[in-house]
Image (cartoon, rainbow, N blue to C red; front, top):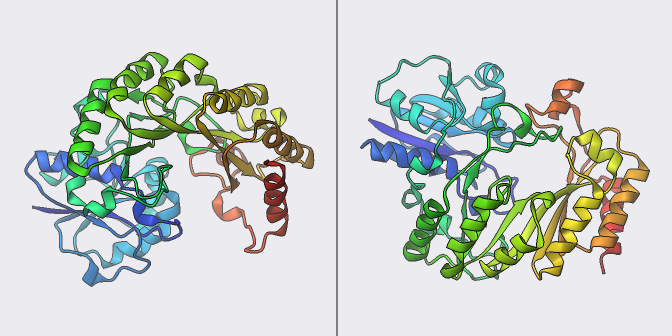
Amino acid sequence: MNIVLINPPQTQLLQPRAYLPLGLAYIASVLEKAKVDTQILNLADNPNPQPSDIPPADWYGISCVTATKDAVKKLIPILDGRTVIGGPHPSVLPEETIAELKPDIVMTGESEYMFRDLVLGKIEPIPIMNAGFHEDLNLLPFPARHLFPDSDVVDRSGIHGQEKGVPATTVITSRGCPYSCNFCCKGHPMFNWYRYRSAFNVLEELIFLKERYGIEHVRFVDDEFTLHKGRTTELMNALRPLDLTWVCITRADTLDADLLSLMKLAGCVEVHIGVETGSDRLLKLMNKQTTSRILKYGVRLIKNMGIRVKTYLMWKYPGETEEDREATIEFIRETQPDEYTISRFIPLPGSAIERVTGKGASDYFYPDEDLEFQEYQKRIGEVLK
């Protein structure tokens, strides 16, 4: 039995191979534990894979997000074996994925164990298989990073918030998000059960990464890194002796001065906050379950602690007015984040706004030369000192 797990092309990213496909690496680790011959094929930076690029396999497992859907569609016809597609996109749109991409199987949820049982012949294949979720993430083996070249595991470019040249990698310590922002697929029932690994379990993985790969910096890719304060405190105490630097993304309303002090002592150098907008009216429309006052307080608190802060902003959320944009510019003027990113609104499959409006990503078009967007970016840049 030979299994090939595929990370599809995603050449729209600035550095496609800088983001290790941890989901596939977790599946591979479970397969290897069951003595299944497993390979991972990372096609992230390959814009046009050819049949000669693909090793033969009995089963192919392909990870798919909405942004890679078209690449996966082109990939499936050149695979000489049975195909299983998993990941966020097929998890929220299983019937559509079967119809459009035409794999043998769509597997929804967290598929490590169900995929293993499928390829071992312990369960019968059906077109749509619901793998469910893992209650205890500590039982999962660590990702099979050894199936990638070291250059995929270790990044030295600085893209993960480290100084250029410092060896860095990505780690996930929790799954799920209990919030239901209207623009995000994480509000879908498929993703909103939040679970986290123990501090000891995370510590073991980090010690391994230091010893095996010489890692000195980590980007935690959890949706909400500090959601559970007690667990976060335990994790900070575990991290402190490791002498690592790290960055994370979280919500402003889960932070306080005491926790941020512990985070800084444990090596935190940067926190990313999903602000989206400085307009309270728009925050309500987005169902962000926060206010501009809380967001401003959180950003200032991070900066006052001597930790860098990056804010994520959104452009043209449905209903956005010029007054809302002015509120966002004023937010940036007042808080002075160290970095910011502006994303143009596109509804993710499974998001509440897509379900309510009936409009998906294909209904939104932004011209290559979006002068209005460029002017907005320029104005935000001008208010940063």
